[in-house]
Length: 50
Length: 335
Image 1: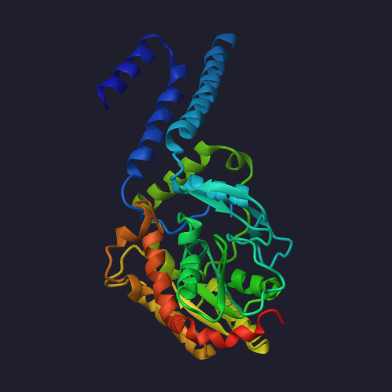
Image 2: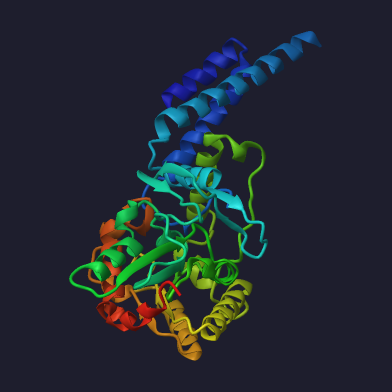
């Protein structure tokens, strides 16, 4: 876990601000999606809607 | 009780605000007009509609226009990405109808640089006794069956003298039905992250990459390939009954060209063409010596770019004997 994430977790725990947790989780998930989908295209042509 | 509800309400409110910020962020920083998933989504929303004929599936909205994948796209009154064509057709005109999907449509390519328009310019260059019109009837996400059905139901209204069936490696997909609903109708963030999720799923989840996916479309048991073969056969019959010449042009997938990983697919298409007695052209040779990436619209979108379309148009031009094979068709113009 990065320093920033550790500090954020510590802040939430000490101040009992767990309502911030979903934001942290979503940020991690969306960042991971972007990071892991970089690079050359491996997908066939995909059409949104139709 | 109230003390437990307060953080939950706060968390829910924060999530909503956060999602709003993500939506604004995608619209502001990700949507640069060249992001494939978002541009295809805009294409579907602004220029396509569900066809009244369920056999056709979808079609272009006549008279619409948009800026997509970096280029202007306008749809004429009869539903093609092209200028308006006279009806009745002027005498001394040979009209060629190009059926196909997004490759024929010229996704990411300026209208005048698409295969159809470059072919038209080549045919009309020099001193010719006839005038050629090449109609770009390509529609994004059409499969072989949709092109065939559209031609048999609507195509004759454009008074073609010659039909080119532009076959793509994904033409054996089953006919797409409009998806969407909910967030997929309006959320840029939803479309963008759904695309990212699909990409990650293919990389780490064992999903099909492009090669496995396209090869799989041509299994003997594939419903889409069965339908494509039947629909091309029906189109060949339709054209023969009307003494309308039909040729089949096969477009290569541009990820890797030498060795070409979808050679078996091309063999299937060539064999189909031979069994129906259709003149056949494989465009792979026209681009094989190029570096694949130099032929793509963007690094994330391997649709043929303007350079690839130029090479392919030249190959089709030579396939048509520089137009000489079509001159005899001219007297039918205007009759």
